[in-house]
Length: 377
Image (tube, rainbow, N blue to C red):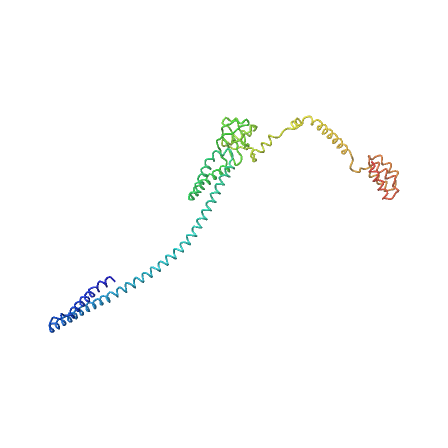
């Protein structure tokens, strides 16, 4: 538009000038002669015609220039339209990619959150495993594992803030647990301190197999199974270990082989054995009440022996005399059967005597008589 206005401006200026000249030409002076006025008017007309022709040529040139410039402008406009359409398509594609990217980002965000929650769960699991390991560690093993468990716990605490430290923290804890389990399965030797029965500390060596631990002091005065006592921060070693067991424990701690006494109860069996008292101590603890109780017990023992002797002397089998007596009864020789009664013992002899006295009665009455006789004796 600026270029078109610049081109048309001279034409407009020429037309304005011609109008002024025409006005001057058609208004001649009244004082001039008629011939001169005609010549002036003709000159003005010719001049105006020349101006019109010149302006027409300029206008045609402008039209030609406009027509010449319209084609590239149209092509330029079409090119710009195609570029705008392509840009719109690209914008639509980018918007679609943006929406798809937002969906993918939402899915990835949810997945990352799920993984972070899983990592937090793993951290809690490993920390609980570390705390449980501290409760399962025996007192002799405590000092050697305390540093490793504390370091692993610190790494897990830092991993809660920086999740990329989780593999390193978990690896440290698992390495400590693996070393501890290998030592418990195969046995290992440790240096430490134990208490004797008086509560005195003794430095020495421990031999640990799983839940079982043995201790020998440096001077060898204290040697035996190491147990845990409530309220005590150090293992306790009782002084009642036999000499063969002391020798076996010392041999094993020195790296040899020997048969050891095993208390898998954690010292409960040894405490129960030490808590047992003898029979005489039971009697002494009972005091004066034990005197009548012991008398009653002695009397019951005498009666039991007497009854045992009586039962032992009692004949259980029928014997040969009873067989002969029954044969005489079947044969009807009641007098001969009565003669055989003297060879039998009481109370069988009196029972058979009553039966022979009423042998003539029916069976039902005889059974009733014998039953009453048994009840009466």
